[in-house]
Length: 361
Image 1 (cartoon, rainbow, N blue to C red):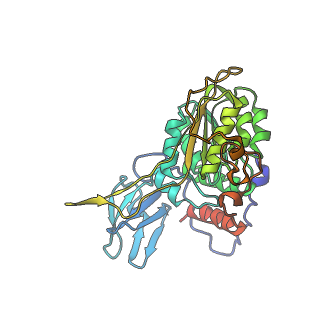
Image 2: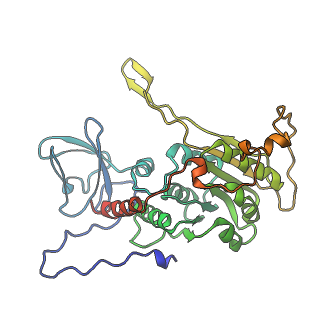
Image 3: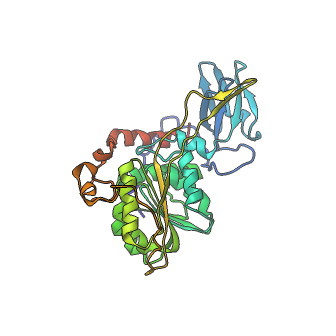
């Protein structure tokens, strides 16, 4: 799979030159227990400045404040405190999924932990679920989905851009400790358009559809065909117009329940003695989540009785160019229409370099 995405093997090393330090085995972050060779370890000093290292034979972590030998951590319990050569103390912990998601190299923007957690809950991603994902980005949400479906489930990701797919494959592989070029055994990754790939899976082939893309309303028909009766459709969108247009596409299809949409804000708190107050910063709007259930195939959804606000369904207003996207619409959208900036090729190359170098740092 994805032979075109495999990287070229590195050139053979010069036998006369001293060889590189031995490479540690690759180990995933999805585990507990004492630290071992190949584990990633997050070091936090007394000011909570974070450094992530990969344990390897004879390895050293250097900073302007001294040297810490990897051997001090190998075999130690998760959460131990160690000192470097200058007496600087570090708390050593295995990175959590949220730590990895926020710190991993990326090309496309990621879905942040506050949203991915709600996707797992309101998308009802259960062990054994068959999930179809579109818009893999940098692989953050894919990692969460693979953890949730477990060894009996499966995730099929569709990504239009091959360079994004490559970054996602590397990030997912690093998290689960897979060998280079290997895919997670419960994951299929396809480069292409959702409308072209989804029909090849067959009717009622997946339990959940999760879309993170520019125009999810264009995929409603294909999603309806591939979802089982009672399955969940979930879309993550950035703007109000995308939200409105997707909701109307679900209503117009006729075989989805009434869409439900929301956004979330997370406000951390400062906790120090009597100084208990909100932090000065908060995680505010990142995107909207929208869900709907698939009715039994061939069964019209029961429409909710409502009292629309005056003018909300006025045809003249709906068809006015200034309201394109609200209440539906037929125009073609581009990334620029929602303020999405393109990702420079050099940023993607830098992300891939950081992922691959990070395995041995």
